[in-house]
Structure formats: structure tokens, C-alpha cells
Image 1: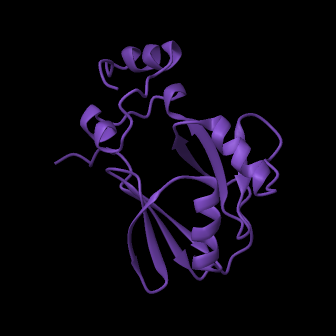
Image 2 (image 1 turned 180 degrees about the vertical axis):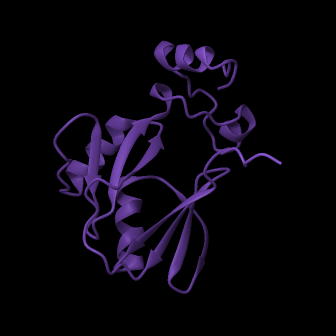
Length: 148
């Protein structure tokens, strides 16, 4: 038997110092539905994936370690960051850190290879979300074209 092939990411888990404060802040930056909540943890729904937010962060801020979050509108996140008085990091792309040191990198769905199945997009209310020509070309080059 060969080794297992990576297929995708089911979820990412973030640690925060204050769960309620994190949910309030993330609600100011992004529109999301709460998939569930248990003591010390909440789960933000991403359709067929989720973001787990857990209370209890004890380590310092992330520097090189980060995660890329896919959104429908990079500009909306930029505006929400300004409204929340969170300064984006300098450099290429859009990135920022939350008050607990989690480093978010924001990418727009249309610009990246990451693709949701059409039925998942519809279920999430994203009927018109399209890829750019560059993203479609990258997908085609890998034989993955023809998806949302």
C-alpha cells in the first residue's frame, strides 16, 4: 500500500485568549454562520469546511506561520479592517494579525486555484462567484478546469 495522498483541509484551528471577543471581532470582519459551540470552542461554517476557534492561546504572536482564508471580496475585508482599526501588514497581498497573534492572509476566491464544488457554492449562497482567467488557466494546467 502506498502513502496517503493529501486531498484537502477539513478545518483549521485557531487559539485565542477570549472566545467571545474573538467571535465578536471575526463577526465585524467577516460574515459567517456559527456551525456549533461547546465550552471553550466555536466552529465557524465554511460550507464543507470550518474554522475552529478555541480559547486558551498561550504562545506569542505568529510571525511566519499563517493561514490563507478565502473570501468572496478582498475589498470588503480591507474596509472592515479599517473600520475595526486593524492595520494590515505591509507587503504583498492582504494580511493582518488578530489581537491574539493569529496571522491571517486573505485571498479572493476568484484569484486562486482553491475551488468549491458548484453545489457547495450554491448552498453557501455564492451562485455568481467566478474565477479569473489566470486562476482558470492554473486549474486547466493541472487538469482541474471545469469547476466553479
